[in-house]
Amino acid sequence: FAGVGKTREEIAYALEQGIYCFNAESEAELARINHIAGELGRRAPVAVRVNPNVDAKTHAKITTGKSENKFGIDFERIPAVYEWISKDCPHLEIRGLQMHIGSQLTTVDPFIEAIDKVSPLVSALKKDHDLRFFSIGGGIGIVYRDTLESGEAGWWSADSAVTHPLTIEAYTRAVVPRLRGLGLRILLEPGRFLVGNAGLLLTRVLYEKRGSAKTFKIVDAGMNDLIRPTLYEGHHEIIPVRKPNATQTELADVVGPICETGDFLAQNRELPPVAEGDLLAVMSAGAYGFTMASNYNTRPMPAEVLVNGSTAHLIRQRQRLEDLIAGEHIPGGA
Image (tube, rainbow, N blue to C red; front, side):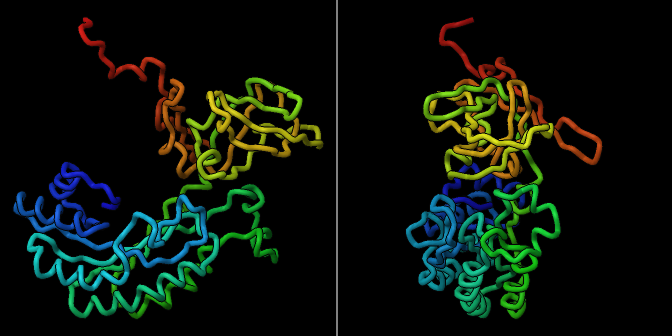
């Protein structure tokens, strides 16, 4: 159970459900978990999240391992914190150590730097405490700019360090030798890597608007459905669902229906000709898409469909307008 802001109710619920481990982010949180576990007559399994002060070389909003970030306890304080847990927190059971330096990393160097810095600390802690695991976090990046091309083996073998992100083979070659000697279970968090390229957002062109400065393709999906372009300047490849006959392209912005200029899925993008009613596929939307979506501007959430071979399954129903007000009550009303 990770996160810097665990509530009392969440901690109690996790203990009652037999959580494998709390990844604690501060001494105050450790004290809170210890107190709640004592009230419930339990021992809470914990791992401390260490902040190694390593720059992940990723977007500033998703780097999580620098000293100015809100995550974890400073590297230098970890030994003293573990001693404090052992001596003064009778309702805590030390399980391991955890770190996570950032998301969407496209080179292996930050991983190496973090592991090389923290591994000796893990070895030292293991001598005095019953460590079972070392969680090295996640962050392995995926392809966003060349989604379709990356489906071909030849794309990966081409010699272009700029184009190619980190591969799982390169990652394991770098980190496994550094971890093997620890004699601990190694935990990973490869969420985006597993599902990011597996999902796409389907949207329909509502209008084409040609202004004096730009051409806009106005679609029925917006920042409320996929906020990454607005929030992170994230790039998502956008292609017509039906391959157009024409080969020419035009420069356009793909924008949504929300009442903000920041509501866009792409800006200054070369696109093939698309007309009103055409479907567009916004690629690489399988991670941080629906989970970051909202009902902003009274927009219902889209449906989710799981495609398995030639079979499609509706796994989340589309919201209706009625659903948006289902939990609301008017004071004094019937």
